[in-house]
Image (cartoon, rainbow, N blue to C red; front, side, top):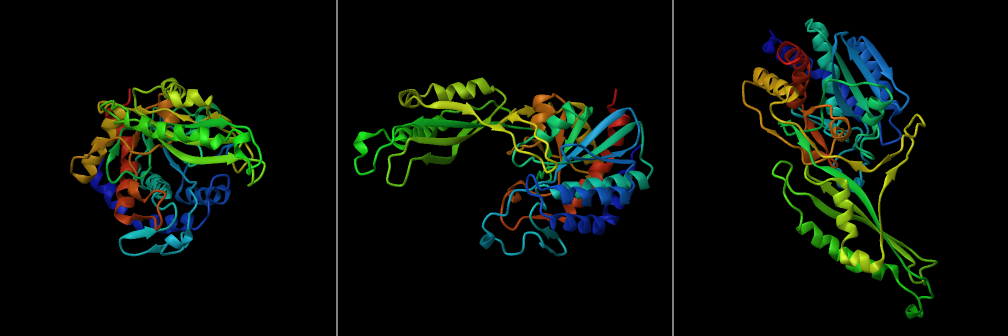
Length: 402
């Protein structure tokens, strides 16, 4: 039987080490395509706490292995971050951060380096307490998530051939257990015009003017989205707009907008694309509608192209992965967890959305801290997450593994 009090006591014991490690990796810039230095720091810590094997794959993801059993369980934290935005909005240096009795501040502290720090020390607890069983735990620090959710796990599953029985995603979750998320698509809509001198605009066709009614139509379409009763309503919004012309004194000859389309479980990508193409304003303008692709190199130089479609996913509360997380939560914290979907997108779009490997979410930090100035996480939540990650493999093998 799992001794939850012993695990919790060890997680509390290692809180200073977790906090120090988190501050170390927060201090290392790891924007997409530049994660190499932080990956090496994570490798150093994995080796220090006693992982059985540490491997960096050709994309640059780091995979740390604990145990040699037949039931493979993965835990994931993306270790890239968004940029800090306008530095004037920060009250402290996003890389030096700060620490007080309750919190650790810094870029990525919640999204999502806190999860990484907690996972590494969960492995140490497993080793210290002799909790290895008939499982292999793979702790993953993944890259390029912020620019292309799930691309790292497409590579891990399809090229590294890692197929766990389930995965734990350690994105911030406000202390709750997460069982799914809406999907999303990045869609480009382009109008075409004919340039002419700006002193006589009637001689040309202004692509920006052709886009104007489409902009209003997208706003209208968002109000018409339906609720699937599980993940909520889909949504669509314009995230970017741009145009071209020969000069600033010429009529625009092209204009395009980028759409962020969020998908619930009842909205396949074909439907989302057709909704845009069927708008009367899009037809009237003769606009092109296409899905963006991602073809950026990782920090190792590897390019793994993919369409920017990220499937929605949800698992039932009776799924073994979900029941495992709930049982671990009850045992450790002696209370009942909230089980609900995330509001944002995670690497689960590839693990569960594309490859149907069940995912469950539990991570330190709050969702509202993600992509927000003065980002911080809570030491108490780092400890709780660490304890969860240490307990989950044993609970699964004892109660739910086939």
